[in-house]
Each structure stands twice: as C-alpha cells, then as structure tokens.
Image (cartoon, rainbow, N blue to C red; front, side, top):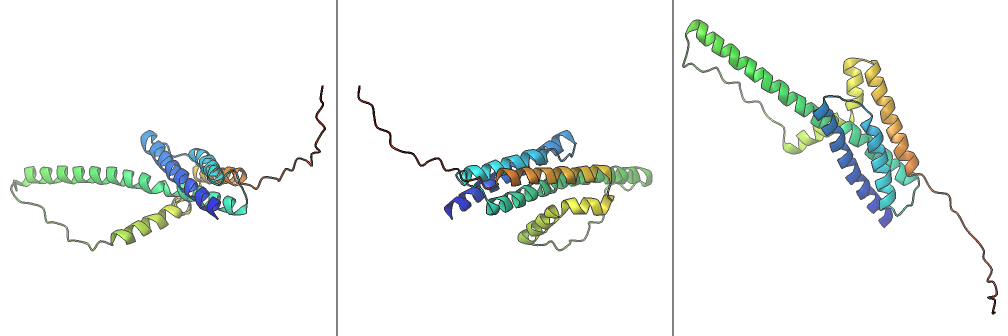
Length: 189
C-alpha cells in the first residue's frame, strides 16, 4: 500500500510540473500544441514508477493515465486566464480611450462614468471547483466551440499518445526468476 501512495505522490508532483511546463510553453511562445503532452506522459509514468520502487501494474497504469490527462487538460486554465487578462486589459484601454474621446467631443470633463453594479461572486472553493471542471473538460470544450478541425483533432491524438506513453511505462514487469543455482564445490589448489 505504501508503494502505491508514494507512486501516486510522485505522479502528482510530475503532473503539476508537467502542467506548469505545458502552460508556460503555450503562454511564452503563443503556440498551443499538444506535443508537450508527450513529455507530460513520460514524466508522470516515470515518476510513478520511481515512487513505486519499479513496480508496475494496472493500478499504476490507471493512475498514470488519469494524472497525465488531468495535467494536460488543466493546463488550459492558466492559458485561458492569461489570455482573458490580456483581453480585459485591452478592453479597459479601449473603453478609457472612448471615454476620453467623448469628453473631448462634448466637453464633459470632470464627470465620471457610471459604475457597474456589483455582481455576486462565487466562493473561492466554488470558483476553484468550477475552474477544475472546466479544465478537465477543456479538450471537449474546444471541439464543441470550434468544431472538429484539424488542429483540435491532432491535439487530441497527441494527448492520447502521451497517455499511452504513461500507460506503457507503468505496465507490470514480467517476473524473471533466475535459478535454481547449485552450489559448486570450490576448487582447492
């Protein structure tokens, strides 16, 4: 039982690092490709195998598959947050420019814009749970919104290959027995 727990913890660590790697690559380069999911599958599979002491099997495979999928799909959340922040900033700048233009055109300096009404915000736990669910469903949300295009299909195929890598790495190893060995008489010269 201890091996599965340690393997699971190592796998979670690798999944978090893989998610950060995936999101950082996508944000810094502006290229969102699924090739990083191959590295995530490899990292998670090897981490689970190292944490379990080299023991593989169905439990480890299922854990590796779930962690790899969650890491890759959850990487969409920080990417979306990054681009939403950029879009919000651009909208605020555009709104401020329009307001300055209106003030110049109509001479209404000194007046402030009408503040937006306060909206009820969900609790932090509810917000995090919603982000997690959206992240886990992100590959399917992309297909739903954009339709099955070439890039989305390739991304999902690469994700499946990354999952397959994690599955194979954590497979049960065949038991190899060497022996029986006979004691040989030592020669006395």
